[in-house]
Length: 422
Ligand SMILES: *Cc1c(COP(=O)(O)O)cnc(C)c1O
Image (cartoon, rainbow, N blue to C red):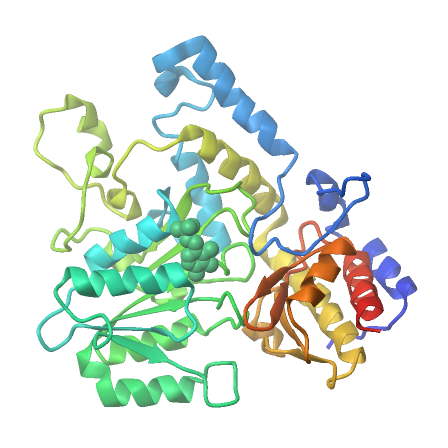
């Protein structure tokens, strides 16, 4: 266990010893109207812009200007295979093999495409299990899949809920649900790191449990990718999806990631939606050939992708590739551990942290309940130069991101919170 001390000197000393400290300068830090740097704690919502990004996008704009359609083959980074330049780094970030990973579409779209292939309900096995406080888009998506297949979206949805008076989910309770209803569950779809509580689930444990009962298992890793060490391949999950605009710093609405486990890479029996980008690259432009499925996650692509968005992803992934997810997670644990330490000093009668205490069961985000607080507290934090976010009914989410947040940021955040609470 790392040891922490209160006082600014500890924060400054930790920043001095931080091998990743210089990366902060590689990002644009938002400022207030007086030009003072804000304390940005919402990398879990929209990651900051790497300074590199502009040059990467400008390169593609320039090649488009100079080459027009020839850029597909003649651009410095040719557009036809552009997504391939992202694969290896992205696979490294999520702990997958290159054949298992593709960057395409946006998150909820990918979730639907995965359900087209991995939600195959029958008359007796048609239910979908999600966590009770799943991200709304995920809940809406699975409900619509149930309706699409002619099932009732209330009857068909099973919620893994926390116990009364608790916030976090327990695996024993999931086991009970599966023992009782496992035969009726077609798909288990869980947010790998819950957006609200920050609980990082044991993906492998959930997958093994689900598979034991004959369910397919997928994860939405929007809050996991770039935040925790995911090991998607080893988890054995059938599929996973994630976005790139949160911890992966690739810009608002940027393209999303998708993982399909290697064991499905060559399957032709899976139901899927297809387009010309799921077709064999060698014969794609013959135009009149019968459909020939690309193997691996690439085979789920539909369209030729937006290069400008991919350029932003590439800039960001280059940073992740250079740093490595191990080093990042190591700092993250120290930084968030420090954050937890300072919050606890405020007293449990004032503040409750609902995120798991065990660093293996969370990423960098802490979800904080302030006793008797309402949204005005969050507004005052914003006025004090802290960008955090408020999630009803009473939670402030703060995510010190190891790539660009410092120990001093965390110290200042808690000092300002302290000032407001007084
Ligand atoms: C951020 C997030 C989304 C957002 O979906 P988009 O399709 O990118 O708009 C969906 N699900 C989860 C779990 C998220 O964290």
